View 1 (spheres, helix red, strand yellow):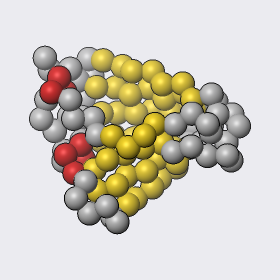
View 2 (tube, rainbow, N blue to C red; view 1 turned 60 degrees about the vertical axis):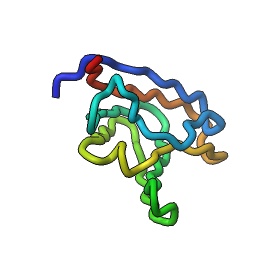
View 3 (cartoon, helix red, strand yellow; view 1 turned 180 degrees about the vertical axis):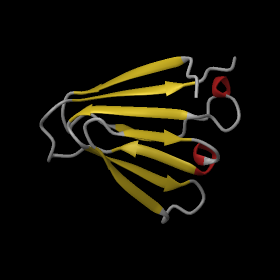
View 4 (cartoon, helix red, strand yellow; view 1 turned 90 degrees about the vertical axis):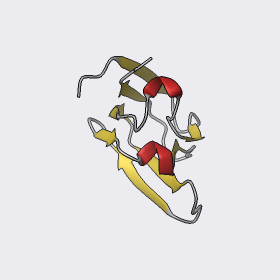
Length: 101
């Protein structure tokens, strides 16, 4: 992939979070591809199906991990990084995107 944009997110500790959302902005085009690199504290990354709210998946994004979301991911799945009292260290996340408009 040749990404055209990068977004930097800084999580100071487990009190910083990202709510449920889909990266389905018009500027990302249909079936956007998003790459995500994590540095620092490990955090859970949750997925929830858009239609079947009981269908959920979670994974740990540890230091140096890479997550690639593509295809129908943004159409059918919400994702989030929830708050947690178990994390006291910082985390930096860089998401790479392709801006089409």
